[in-house]
Length: 232
Picture 1: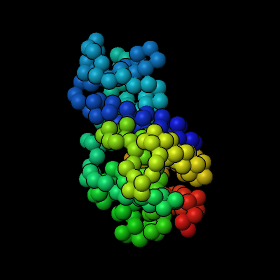
Picture 2: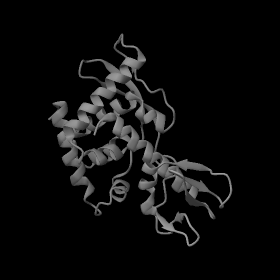
Picture 3: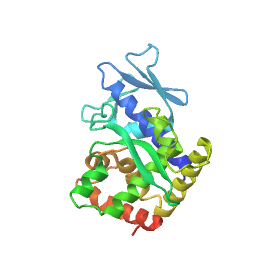
Picture 4: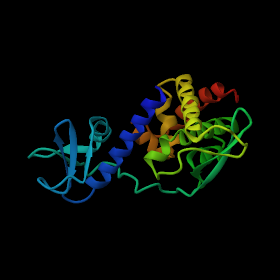
């Protein structure tokens, strides 16, 4: 999985969650519309949102078919989070491999990695590796475009001469190399926890994992990431 694939996957997750929040409103339905899917309050009304096939596949497990066509949100479907619960907007500074310090927007609340390290479920090195992956995702512009339209590039504290687009490109390259190193089986859990700040329980639900199995899977993924960064 490369950075472009990750960006597409995150965009699909983002659109699926938006659609789920709209479908939670009474009377809302989603219907096929050519090669896309339209969310409406009622049939025949102008769509509130149109999503593509990739986003629909992320959403379909939360839907049930309607007798007269289309789908509605299943009453048993887990509710899409309203925004970013527990999110406290702020900035974090990360020291790059070349010693340059970069600052990026981040959650200053207790993010999943912070929670896990405080309870000694992951090591400091594993936590740092996850933070570096997150920093590169923000610096590349992938996260900023999907959430709060933050500045997609880090602000350098080390006098870097790289232009913003070059810094973003370099971050995308680092992100792609990291994803290739950990392998496709480890990326879904790293994406949800490190990049989008999804809770461990929410990640287990999103990935169809058995309860209380996420910690071991995440730790294994972080160990691969730590080895890639040479932090072990």
